[in-house]
Image (cartoon, rainbow, N blue to C red; front, side, top):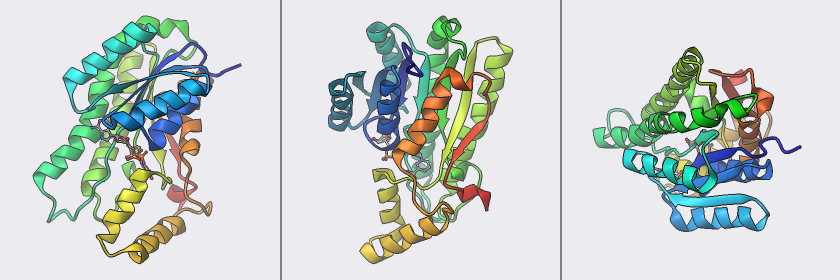
Length: 267
Ligand SMILES: NC(=O)c1ccc[n+]([C@@H]2O[C@H](COP(=O)([O-])OP(=O)(O)OC[C@H]3O[C@@H](n4cnc5c(N)ncnc54)[C@H](O)[C@@H]3O)[C@@H](O)[C@H]2O)c1
């Protein structure tokens, strides 16, 4: 049996990387998926790929930092598919910078996407998710993508760590609230380690600061060394975890963290 048959999902940052892999996995599991992103062409391509493989998916332009656009995304998902059962708050950016050099505007930009985007998603999806939550043993499911850096610090990543730590605890507070208010919606966070995506490539370029391929390769080797399992993660490693949290297999899980990091946090 498909694990999310008949469920309706919104996946932010769904054009590429972990979001695209998760959208594909959810569609393979039987969900109808609304992919959103600011990369329109790539987003349309990802949605088309899902449709060609026999799944149901649509794409919508969406900046997760915009409250107006969240209202539109939820309304369109309801109009096109009939509601919302799964919210994957995945969109995020990873630019870093030394704290004494970091501009306030860059800090605020990161918070507007990594934290406010997650807040707005939960705020605007919950009322619609409640309408169908009783249809599923596991109710509605909100999955917020944090990071291993929601647990540990990293030099040059103060803003990123703050945003991902914020996502981790906002997830717990929202889970408790949804439980207490009887909303029948579970809220959990996923914590990827170092995963092979375009996003990681840009992080490597930023760490190397224009010093060329060798410096990028050195940074990559550092990430590999920090990953006991001996390889970097693949997007499907996260997608499988997302599918589990979206499905009724995780019915008794809320307010907790799913760490998918090849052992990085175990040391
Ligand atoms: N790749 C990793 O190693 C890693 C590790 C830990 C956590 N994460 C987190 O996983 C998530 C996905 O990362 P990824 O590696 O797939 O990144 P990615 O850059 O490859 O993909 C992210 C997607 O989000 C979109 N996006 C960015 N800003 C947006 C906005 N304001 N509104 C809507 N969409 C927006 C981008 O256009 C892009 O398509 C992020 O939250 C990231 O912080 C990634």
